[in-house]
Amino acid sequence: MNSCWNQTRVTYFQFLPFSSIPEIQGSLFCLVLLMYLSTLVGNILIIVITVVDAALHSPMYFFLKNLSILEIGYTTSTVPKMLVNFLRKRKGISFLGCATQMYAFSVLGITECCLLAAMAYDRYVAICHPLHYTTMMSWNMCFLLSAVSWLIGILVALGQTTFIFSLPYCGPNRINHFFCDLLPLLKLACTDTYKNEIATYIIAILFITVPFLLIVVSYIQILHTIFKMPSAGGKRKTFSTCSSHLVVVTLFYGSGIVTYLRPKAFYSSSSNKLLSLSYTLMCPMMNPLIYSLRNKEVKQALKRLIAKNINM
Image (cartoon, rainbow, N blue to C red; front, side):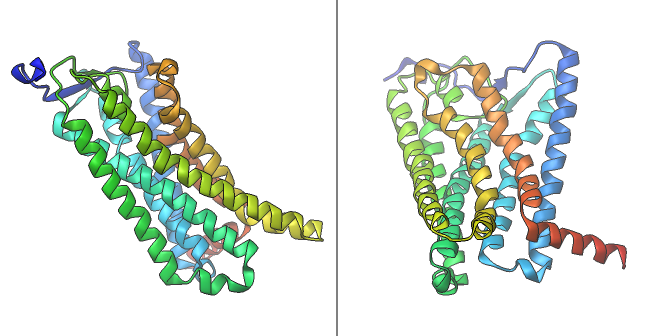
């Protein structure tokens, strides 16, 4: 048995700051706070217009509403604690708090991977099988795809978090990150973590790479259908219905795959922090902008909502 079990167990983890310079810490706090508030406002606005505007009561916007709910939770699972730590000398989190944070972050992250695949399937059916769209993408199917995405996230994250936090942690307790992420925590375990690292890669392959491949296959079929259209205007109009989703997928999966699937020899704590910021804060903030700027129906719904409130 590992000697760590006879030593004092870690009950508190301490996050290392982004910088030791106080002025930079203050600037980072303001920047992160502004980005977080922008994320909340943008995604809440998407939720509101997809609920109140009857023109957006379709499967595509049902999934978009779910995505915005996920983005709010995904960001909130890490950013408020990071903001508090910017203002504190002792930047840390309890053992139980760390486990809770990892579980919430994992649930929302894995669910989002699955939901993005469901959104790609919705676009595939709409473009490649338009005559059967209403039957293939019924509301029952939409709710089923959403529920399955959440169920996969909840169950996989539960197993993963239990696996990580059943390891012995007896020091050091300093996490070179801004939240309780898998790889930085594994480095602190005072036992051999080879099996855990393999399990982490397997989970990443199954629930990051596989949904990504399903998205790629869907878009290959979509592009094949678009290229066969005789009208250039029809091609542009059809592609515009899925271009926003394609941009979101590229941003989210690009940073996620580089973070969790790159070889250990290329792992760097500093680069990992920057990559984590991109998918925990940048992507959720950019998604409402991408969908509102590149989607004509969302822009029109937003104008109707503003006009309605002005005329009240």
